[in-house]
Image 1: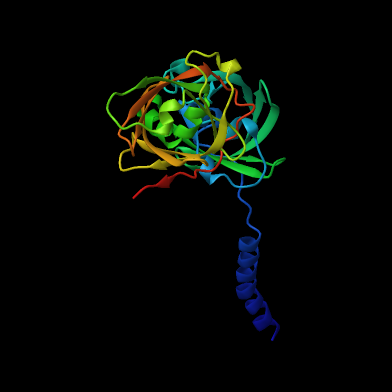
Image 2: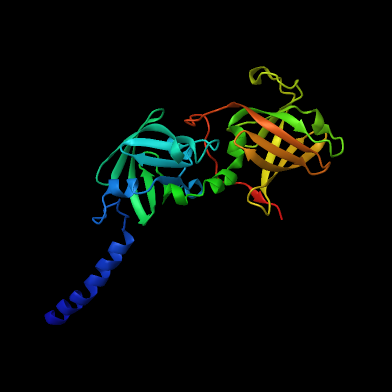
Length: 294
């Protein structure tokens, strides 16, 4: 009988033990002997911060305010602006701090936000998770080389941030074609950063007014929606007293946009005034909320 009990124990215990191990499994930080942590992070020119996949309610501000980060021989670079993305700093953006490596952790020294220790989990050849234990928040990063990174896609997917990167947009051109409409009288538009990310202000001040002296006549809500073209968006401005104005928005360059007024057929061009270069201390990215227009 003792022999039978011993044999049963030998058979059953490994299964019980395996079940226990499965129940308490915890993912380990980066520890791949085939490549070192510095080789992994510096093996890609750019790490795109896939903010929509972020897990947790905490905030590592230099990540939530960046489109990409780069590890360049101890210097930390970031693309925080859409104006100039792909050209600023040779595509790397601006220097925002430094960093150092530990076996499974990167210590970041940001020029504005200070020191952050982030644990690294490699999920594929070019993807990692950065986990902040203090914030209980995980960020997902995807590695790219500059010559294969689609800067244009990042630009148009986040175009509302581009509109916010100027203190004001001044109307400098109105086409002769098109019916008269109330928007003809507007000379300045401001897309405000922060908050709900959907507030605009407009002004009928004279063209050429200094951006710091503009009197804003109206504050309302705006929306940006996808179309069938990746290079065009629908912009709506909600004016309480005359309803919604709908425009087809296209970008001429980093400083000039075109608005085609869909109801009247009038084309306007606006120029950005008062560029704001962010270390992004005052602007935080929100999860993507743009809608597709069918």
